[in-house]
Image (cartoon, rainbow, N blue to C red; front, top):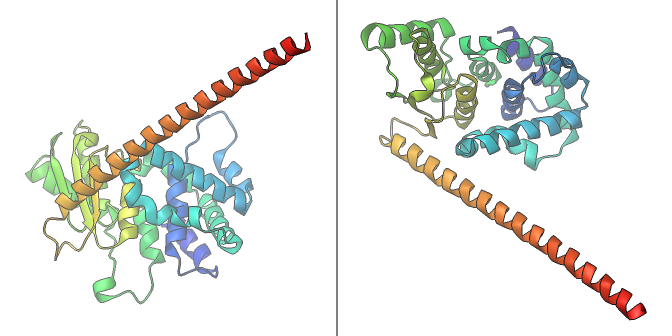
Length: 290
C-alpha cells in the first residue's frame, strides 16, 4: 500500500494525471527489472540516477525483452507499452520519471525484485488507487485484498477441490489476477507447479488485463495464461476467443521472426557479394596496372 500510495500521489501531482496507463506502465516495467549481478551496482540507485529520457529508454528495453521472450502476450500488454513507442513528449517522460523515483524510494524493488512478489498484487493496488474518484456503478473497479483472495483460494482449492497440476482455472472477472496469485500460492504450498495450469481470465478493463499479463510472469503462472478483454456477462464464449487471439499472435510473431532471419541472411549474402566483388575489382586493377 505504501508503494502504491507513493505512485498515486506522485502521478496525481503531474499534468498527466488522467493517463493512468503511463503510471501503471512504469510500475509494471519496474516489476520486471532484475538485479542481474547481486554484487554489482544497486539497481534502485542506477534507475534513480537516470534522466527522464534515459529511464524511458530503459522501460522500452524492458518491454522489448518481454515481447521477445513472450510474444503471446504482446496484444495483452500493448496498452502499457504503447506510449513508450509512440509518444516522445518530454513532459510525459518527466512525469513518468517522477513516478518511478517515488516507487523506488518506497522500496518497490525490495518487493517485486524478491520472492515477496508472490505474496501480493502490487499492480492491482496501484490500478485501484489510480482510478478516477468518481468511477462508480458499472465503471467501478473493486480490488480484492490479498488476505481475502488467499482465504478464498485456500477454501476452494485446498479444502473443497484441491488444485492439481494440468487443470484449468477460470476467472471471468479476473481484474489484475489477484485470485490467480492466491491459487498459485496454494499450489506451491502443496508442492505443485502453477506453470502446469491453464489460467483463463477475462475483464472489461484492458489495463487490468495488461497488468494481469505482467503479473502472470511475476507469479510464475507459466505459458498457459490465456487472457481476454471482454464483458463476460454478454460474451459467453470469451475463452475460445482468447485461445484464437493467442494462436493468431503466436503465428504472426513466428512469421516476423522468420522474415527477420531471412532478411539477415540476405544482408549477409549481400555483404559477402560486395566483399568478393570489391576483391575482384582490386585484383583486376592490380593486373591492369601491371
